Image (cartoon, rainbow, N blue to C red; front, side, top):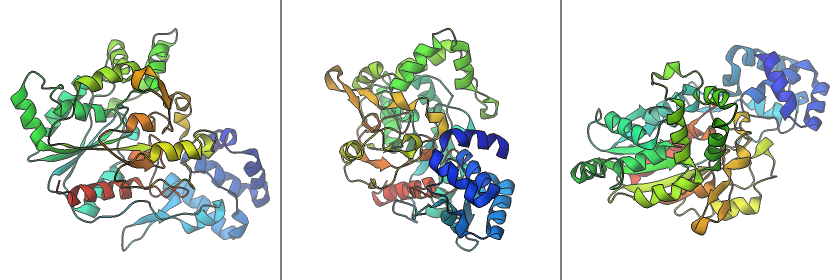
Length: 411
């Protein structure tokens, strides 16, 4: 792993920090390079505060356990935290995981609904789901949906998945699946011509929690659609679909992918929202992610984050302006387009984003706060095994709090 990771790291780490590596020898160089692959970066290199033995031990752990070496698990409590030696070596504050903790379960089954990509590394981290189940005692189900397919197709698949579950459900919907969840229960959605069935479905769904969902569209989809229709469209299609053989889902054709992207664009969102109205009796809440390219405050500014994240009503989490998430490298291509949505009257709104979806677009129902996390961090990806050593965000802890809050609301 190390040689390839070092190349990626050299392009991303500021020169001033990279220069400091030489003071502590090749071991610190190698450790810092490996961190780039794990989506955590050194704040400052303080390897001289560790003994040569400790540095060698950390290197051996990184070789043996990869990104898992960043975190250690207490054998008695089974709680995960960042290895204190890592905190010392790389200048991390290592704050406690953000958000309240709850140890009781809602009456309804909690269903974690998958996003647009069928690959496991872009869906809910199994660790997150397992931790929520263990820490709350809730009955938890994961519902992956057909990748890169239009909302009606995915909502129908979600209906089939819920048919296998007895009793009421709480839906926690990642990214595109937030639209699928809304479409499933809406009077103008999946059962628009079957009012009795719509009412029956909506009665089973106690709540819909959307996380990083493009309710008001995302310009990322519009740009991707243009690229798909260009000379290198076949290459982009291969990138979008990737190797999804393990998902067990049938991959869509290019026209279907085009239809899906068109439905996620800024221009279509207003039409979708006018038709897919909320169902009576269902509690809707939403969360947005905020991340920064190279972890730097170039955009968005603190004032912009304060303005948009401050719109949260009854916040479950409060965004700390003192921390900045370091955006995952795969999102650097889409990030320049992610902040733009269309507001009322067709005016463009530019707000902070998670690299794919803006805060303005992610708001739906009760907007309950911004997370210091990018579009993959919010579901415990990529390679996230515990609290972020810089922001303190821990996906497992956050969703434990969400489920506990649903229980407290009697859902």
